[in-house]
Image (tube, rainbow, N blue to C red; front, top):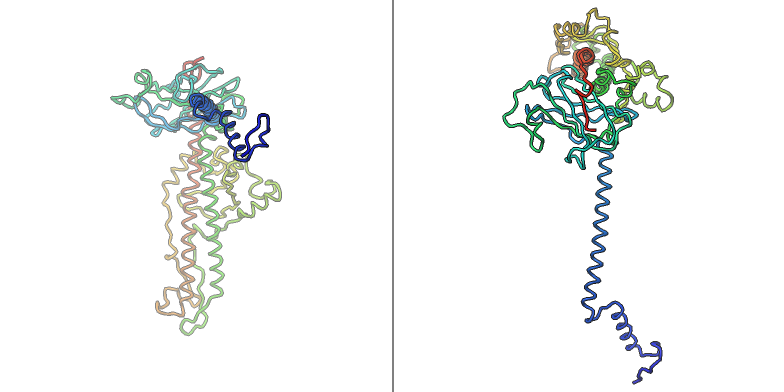
Length: 480
């Protein structure tokens, strides 16, 4: 057996000894042998400590980044409130801002308007910054603010407009709103858990906002050079949503009415083509019935939504009849974020339903005003609506119509078991269903939907005449 010669290279060793030597060198270098247990333990602890520090650092950094992201996105931190003493409840609308982001609006809605004062001077707002998260303590505001309180008549809406000459800082702002008058008996145990004693002494609630956040919603009414009028704020922040929903409902209803009139026209054509033997007469046809004045001669003209969509892809809206003459606000209302496309259908009718009205609602809006274009002879919307409400709502069934036959008889003269007459009976039944559907749609359109637009206009008029505003440090003050 060969022995190792001093100074010889490892390559000269036999293969088993070469492996053993390599293993021993590796053990000594990384201190894996039994004599290095303590040293090895220290190295492991140091490595784990370093790893833990790195993980903790990354976690803290991620939390800071996440907090910054939330702060940068969230504009409103509580969507409802409860007054501390009276426990009156309310909701908070999204935080609105102007295009320059140096003016903001916080809009509140009391669940029961009669429980709170409708005078802006009966409220006081104190604003502070917040140290840390939304549950933190008060802090100085990073930028100066001024404010005003709006009360929109008896609608139950209360607004706070904030002015930031230097723009809003990305900072949480706590607004403590105090009701100076209590129209409800205070509860025995105030709802003031976690609040200071002022919430026990006064009827108050908190709203936490960040107007600098990306989640704040642009409101065109706030873009004016001076503080906007109450009716301007209300028209864009409140009426807009209600009106847009109603315009979509009216648009859909006209499309459904158009469909029923098309069905009626189709069945009328079938009357001239469908004949049966009745007794000795080999060719008896069903004739159109005499219609009540509420629907007689009705027609719907205009372009369906699919055609409108195609035309808008091919050219500007100003060339489309039914769109080109709309006011700017009407066009904005008819532009839906979900991609819904309006049609341009218009009802042409010689008679309005009793208790209802008819006007071209497409070209104008509630804020533009409908009533002054109607020529009703009434001095106010209220008087006109009262007059309509005194009229009976018509109720017509197509079964009550007289359905004549070409032989001088009526369809009711046919024998129930006469199978030869079945095509005429089925045609009559289809016509009745279409007439009844159209009558119901028109009645709802004229006696409910259009009147609701006038009610919105009346509400906006009342907001203009009955709103109040309070400003200055006695109304709104801030912790500088």
